[in-house]
Image 1: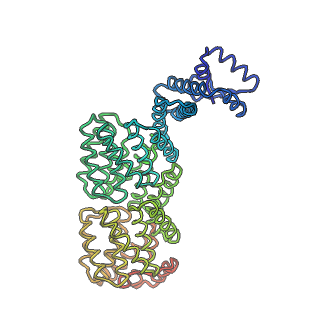
Image 2: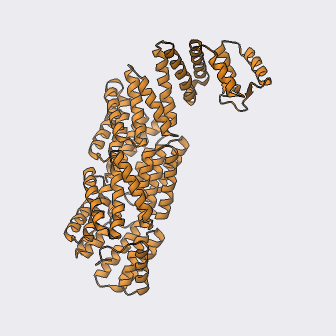
Image 3: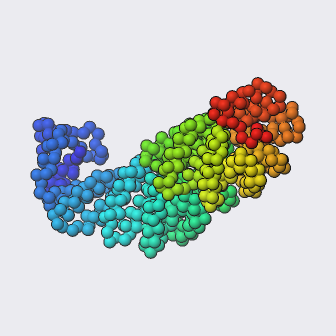
Length: 579
């Protein structure tokens, strides 16, 4: 493809003369016009045959050919003006060809290399939200060409580091982030703050929660000393999100309010991180408006053409649906976002979403697929340095193994996952990790160890109602089985909400306590309602447990149906005294 204006600029000829010659070439069928030109106001053409184009091109000597590429690049820059970023790939081509041709001729042109790096960074930014593999190629080339330009090298390293986060290469990404931050501290404190915030996000994902928080706060402090910009808005949102997950809702809310206020003052449109943080604060406190905030973040991300941020919002919606609505809806949402991430080369996001999807796979009874996915995620984690994702995979796999009688294998998974979960301190992995450890200990007959884990869970989740609800069923079941009924009741102390998971879990816990208190009619009523609710919610496993409880209350048909569910899963109920 080429434009008449470009041909005139490259040939240093008048436009009218070029148009006459192009019309003659159209008549002779050497070139043909393009109906809708890529550049408004320019006539666009293409060659009928690539061979004609290539022969004409290679007849031009190297040095004049390089000059013509430079002339073409300058014409594109001048024509595109403020929209030059939209044509970054074309400019990469022309400056790249010019640089190669001058180097082949034995001439050093650092000015061309500098321009090429500038447009490689622009082209990488455009590709980031569409195809991370293409973006990585651009950024690696920019790093290689930056040479003695310390600022350009730091910028290229920072952008490459962030792409490698999305490509699932944490070790190299951390190293590049550190190098870029060291340079930016001397050269550009705003860029240093932005890069710190990126690294804080990565460190949190790999389980280094303490350093993630300290670096995040340092980034905010540094950015607050600079003229306010979108980097500070994003930093507020990222830190608020992590505070919300940790149950520090007041701290998170303060940052969210600062972020939205600043975004309004500056006219910053991308507030997706703030919306995700707001959703987390609401969701972890039983407020289903989190679903609205996440849908708003997704719509905004799609409208702005954002890649990873949109994928994060879509993943968070899957998690919210799993708590507030149902597992079938959550499964469908995770299937959707996995396809979205895969199509854009967001490998890290895709693997994380596949790890999150293990939860509905467990409850829906799709255990064979769960085992395959957990194995694939675990293998990927081993090759890429390991993170919290590997812990999640082991948790769900251990649940399946213990139900299928492979208790020793389940225990091996617990031994591997629990130290990492404790080290991170992140309730997203520590709460389900301790729950899994309690279940496996109970299955091994070690009631003392099981109760230690349950008591730790009770203390850990006092300040965070959602995580308390998340682990409710198994602590209650284990506590009752071990005779610690007061401990089981403690998990019901918080206020109820209408989230689907919370309603189902509380019915089951109350039914087990009524059964223990020798109230068979009340136990039967609660177990029956729990079975119906679990069925609507989508948990085959917990419906099976509720039916067995109903069977113990005298309903033989329910007992037979409950055992049939576990038989179909190739499994048996765990913690026999309660189940």
